Every structure is written in C-alpha cells, then in structure tokens.
Image 1 (tube, rainbow, N blue to C red):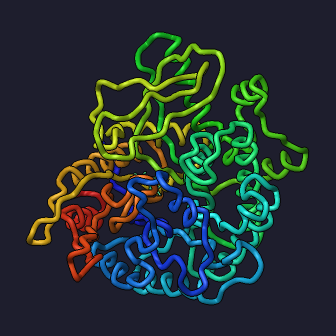
Image 2 (image 1 turned 90 degrees about the vertical axis):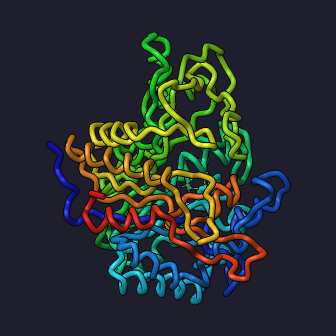
Image 3 (image 1 turned 180 degrees about the horizontal axis):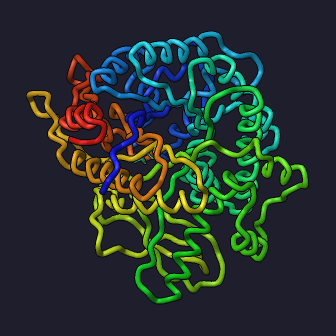
Length: 475
Ligand code: BGP
C-alpha cells in the first residue's frame, strides 16, 4: 500500500536566472560567460540568447502571483553572480542584492518557500578572462565569498540552498563536448576544472555549516543507466557508464572521494586531476557533506560495450527538435549509447521513462543515504497557443502525472523525498535549443506581432498541477 506524500512536501517549480530574467545589462549587471557565448555564431539554436528571455526581471511580481494562483509551496530559482558581483569579486552591487531580496520577500508574502541555486552556469566573464574561471584555484575564495554574501543577505529567509547546478553538465559540456562555454575539448582540463569545482563546492558547504542554519546540497543531473541486454560485456558497460557519468560526481559530494575504477582509468589515460593533501582533507571534511542530494531527472540512458581502446568523446545533443537526429555517443573502452526499444522519446530524442525516476531515487538512497530534493523534472515540447489563448498540453500532464506516481512509489520504497520542483514554471530559454522547446506550466507568447509580447497564459497543465498540490499528490 502506498504512503501518501509527506504533509510538508515541497511542491514547486524551478528556473534559472539566465533562462528567464533578461535585463542582461541593467542595474549594473556584469556580463556572464553565457552573455558572451551566445554571440558566437552557430553555438545556440538559430542564435537565440537570454538578453530579454521572458523578462522576469521586470515581471517577477506577475510571475509570483501566478505561482501563488497555482498554489506552489516552493520556487527554485538561481541568482546571477554578475548581478551581485558584476566582476565576480570586488564590491557587491546594492541593486543586485535588492532585486533578489524583493523577489524573496514577494515569494514569502505569497507563502512560497524560496529555494535558491547559487550557481546555475552563468559564471562572470570577468573571472573567465582574469584566470580562466573553473580552471584556476583562484575561483575557490571568489565562489565562497559570493556564496557567503548570499547567505548573509538572504540566510534569514532562505532555508534550502543549492550550491552548483549540474556540475556534470556544465563541466562536460564546457570542457569535453565544447557545447557550453568555455567550449573546450580537453579531458585533462575537464577533470582539473571539475576538481576545482568540487573544492569550491566543499568550501562553500563547509562555510555554510559553520555559520548558518538551513540545508545545503548540490543539484545533480542523474540519468540511471541500463544495459541494452544481459550480455555481461554490456552489463559491464552499464556499470562503467554509471561510474563515469554519475558516481564519479556524486561520490565526492556524499563521501569526499572519487571512485577507484574511474581514478584508475584516468591514470591510464594520463588525465587524472592533481589532488593535494589539503584538497583531500577539505573534501573529506564532515562539514562539507550535503544535507540533501538535489536530483535533476529527465531520462535514463541505455548503453552497450564500446571495445575501442582509446580516445574520449561524447557527441552533441539534438538541438533542433527533429526527432531521430540524435547521434551515437560514448567513451571508447567504457560504453556507448544504444537504443532502448521499450521507451518512447521526445522530439529532442530524450527517453521518456518515469520508472527511471523511481530507480534514480532508490539508487541515490541506497548509495548515499541522503534525503532527495527533486530539483528538476519536466517535458520539453512544442506547444500550440490556441486563438482562445488556451494551451492543451495533455502530453505534459501525462508525463508529469506518471513521474509524480513514480515519486510516490519511491517514497513507499523508503526513499526520503523532500520536494519536487518541476522544470519549469513559465516557459523560458532552453540553453542550446532556443525558445521553441517549452517546459512551463505558463505559456509565454513570443510572437513579436503581438503587442502583449511576452504575455503569460496558463496551460492546461497549470490547472492540473494546481489540483495535484491542493490534494497533496492526487489529481
Ligand atoms: C537542465 C538544466 C536546466 C534546463 C533543463 C532542460 O540540464 O539545469 O537549466 O535547461 O536541463 O534542458 P534543455 O533546456 O536542454 O532542454
């Protein structure tokens, strides 16, 4: 028999600064690596950028009112480092601090708990220019100082903090696939930058635990891996992929050390990061442990053996929404992608797999024994705005309903799930896929012919989610 959702379950939605705010040069905001990257021809779908995004910077009050109407208990958003410190370090901007303070107050006034992501990929360009961002240890004190400024200004009102959003994504896309800034293809530099990000994450977490009350943890993009069949070589490939894509990253957060199998493989490839005795001590510090694991779940991965001996690479993703254009991807010697005949896919070739969410929750629970906050989950789709301004997104309702059921089942399996913030509340910019890949409960009209440009219209899924929240998980 299923247990019901805990009574204080955090039903919510999520966003990230660059994807919604716009106002990219207003009130003294500095430029981020994304402000710059989107200007390089060919890097994003049809050159779309977040200069205006959905103009949340100016319309946040309207958005918060819509959240209240849906009954959200929590809202996860990120803070743009460049609004707080336009150059990444130095003097903090009063206007930037005020913007998020007002947003937090507005949320609380509407009984919505603010969940704050400290870093959702928009690194100050000044730090990239000054010392190559995540590749330099100089970023550690700068990141801690930035986090500390947020704790000091908002810690009285914010109880849940996310340190780094999807470190595995921004590091692998940034330094291996060259599809995010700084667009490098160099596994050695990737692991070096990743190690530094781990140190920054640990130092900020430790600082928080020493001085503040509340809960803090990373958000990790976890795609549990299946073997394509029972062939032991493919089963081994699945284990390799799980270690390479997930345990390598999550073990550090939860235990403070990297898994041996991947360390060994890195040594063989000559790409292992340098780990000093001080690094090891910081990573192992009990105060650097997260209070929860943030889980961003979209899909599972299915793999097979990849017998090639050397080389390292992952293919870019389908960014057009033309179904069936995804390329084969993998790491020679470890694993490569395979088709899963049991799963349907989205137009962007992402597997649709609610059972995979239950598996993800169980695996995190049994490996890390941490409560889980599901910080992202949702369906990117083409939506149609009817002339009546309705949006009949029954496919999104179906997707989310099945995932809510899976969470319910995982809770009955014994996993402690703290909350669920869907991706996303309003439609927003998809980093590489432009505005046509929509995730929101609220449609944002981007038709430039329409004088109410960027008008918000609740989709059918909005009313469905309102019901889910009102009944604490039934609909
Ligand atoms: C996650 C990011 C989000 C969001 C989401 C959807 O990786 O944390 O910022 O963009 O994925 O992905 P996409 O926009 O590529 O469809």
